[in-house]
Amino acid sequence: MAAGPRLKVPTEAKKGDVIEIKTLILHVMESGQRKDKDGKTIPRKIINKFTCTFNGKPVFTANMEPAIAANPYFQFFAKVEESGTFKFSWTDDDGTVTTAERKIKVSG
Amino acid sequence: MRQLSRREALVFGTSGAALTVVGWGAGVHAGPREAADAIAKFTGGKTAQKGKIALDLPEIAENGNIVPLSVSVDAPMAADNYVSEVLVIADHNPRPEVVKFDFTPMSGKAAASTRIRLAESQNVIVVAKTSKGALFTNQRLVKVTVGGCGG
Image (tube, rainbow over all chains, first blue to last red; front, side, top):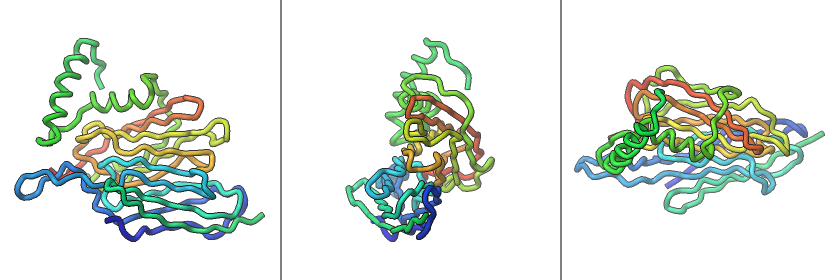
């Protein structure tokens, strides 16, 4: 299960600023390449997609393969022109979607 | 990478495909041919120009299970011309595709960092595509002490 997304998003910015966002979610990212002690392949189970939107418009998407390390971490940027809400979502192979959001106040 | 003739490429491609089928069970790694195929799929067969991409990876990764990667494309992020996609390929992983980032003008910068898995020492190749179809590439060799991906 995906659990406990951690987010680092500024709460304030000036209009036109390019801000830095950091996200991390706890997930084993089972690659589907490993074997258990009986030699059976452990089935793949990863988060295959991460998205970030701002006021409903796409900002950043990561389409992931099993070669993303456990507890997927992303650092990326966003240009903010107005106050609003960042929404984040992590989609698991099993269809589970974990979401989080953060508000930012943009001045000037 | 050595340039293959068409005949060699065909032979290599066929044996490569056979190996891939076995590979899922036996842990045989993909090799440059699959990596080239994944890149060709992304570029539509066009040649990507070297440059414009800063790619930051350790020269030696002690643990292939967690290798920090930063990529940044030096190109404008204007509404009518921006970096739309960045593909990351590891040419000797069991599957060469690592991640594909999608950017928009709202990204502000075509830059991202993450942590990747590398099964063995290999080239990490990055290809960027702009909304107008321009293609850029860069690559780095990473030596891996202990491979990721288990097996």
